[in-house]
Image 1 (tube, rainbow, N blue to C red):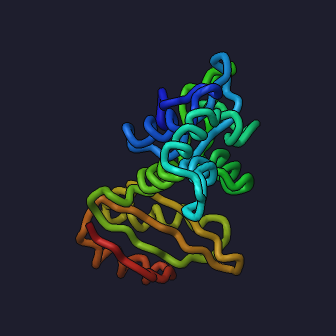
Image 2: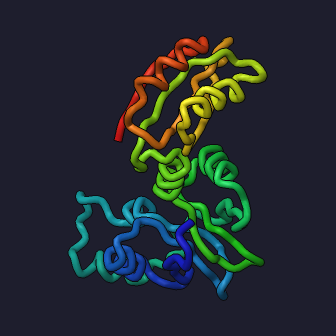
Amino acid sequence: MTANPFTIDSGATVPDAIELMQTHGITKLPVLRDGKLCGVVSQLDLNRALPSDATSLSFGEVAYLLSKLKIYKIMRKNPPTIAPDAMLEEAAILMRDTKVEILPVLDEGKVVGVITESDVLDAFIDINGAREPGTRLVIEADDQPGVMSRLAGVTEELETNITHIAVYRTGMESSFVLLGVNTVNTADLEDAFTKAGFQVRYVLRR
């Protein structure tokens, strides 16, 4: 999560939110009332509050109206939240199911952080070790007990260290195992996997 996020009071105005977002390069804000979360507001919400380009109002009139428009009038009320000790997958599922782009993190009722789509993507990259040096192999394997032990046996025999691993089920009799190893010289390893009955579908070296 992004800890200690910028927030805005529900009684602030639209120009206040616009200035805060522009100053800090953010597009979403938790909204507080008396220190407690009561909503969220995004750049999209602010854009919707702005008059149409076809308006007959003068710039001064528009500025005056916006200066009177409070955040609580345009915010999304009662947003979904999550606890700081929840698992990443819980946050991702909640964001996906509720179609939100920001998830406030509450600890005993206090906003201690937010999770955004960018945070989820960054965590996915870190968990899969996508930026770390080495090789990533996509291996097709039968979806049955003992497969992971066999894969580990092959790497152990060639003294190759597994740095990351993930399994993607295809819904059929086989699955794809994404295996991260700590070397870029994997020709012998690939041959060993093939001899062990696996199919190496893709190799990415960094």
